[in-house]
Image (cartoon, rainbow, N blue to C red; front, top):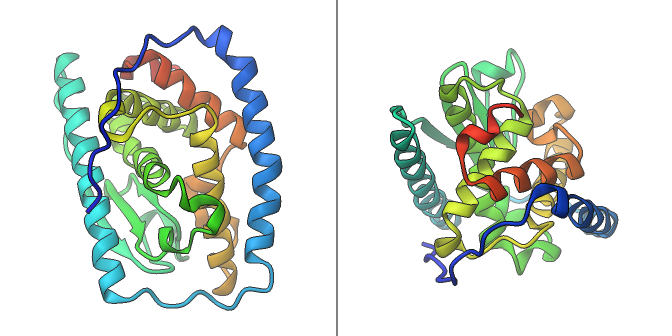
Length: 244
């Protein structure tokens, strides 16, 4: 089980206008380097191996702890806005799973299905991250979980359901959780989404899944997603994500 990471207080965030240029420049660099690294990491790979029961149990415990923190945060922030937050259920699978949102097909990667208000997590996916992601795996995993878990929160706020809205809410949570997970450096969220997307694409290719199988994970450019996250991270307020 992962432990909270003590960190110093988060300083007041600079305005988005001052941050936009550096953020997009960092993301462009990470995407350029990351895409090459991830492509090389998956070149000529064997089909993904099955996750062991011990590894699956360990991963599910990590996700449980992070989800509990995220949903408790939404409960507290929603209460401060005079709203109630209804906790979403979550399910685990390996490789691919049927879901109401997937129609007759299969879905992979972490995703939120609004049809049954459930969060879905592939227990083997994070274990398959290439070496480029290992040194930031713990925080990056939490950020990806936060992006998925933002789906039901955005629904309850009456948002549009856009990926920009969920990325923004992931930033709100990350700012609130800075003492527990550590401050998030600029570009880290985009790299986490990129790494998870590349792994999910590679895994889906082995069982014939197309881009539609990735759901929200495959939407938006990395620069757009990083910018939306930074908007929420700077604001620290869920209401600021409703225009996303």
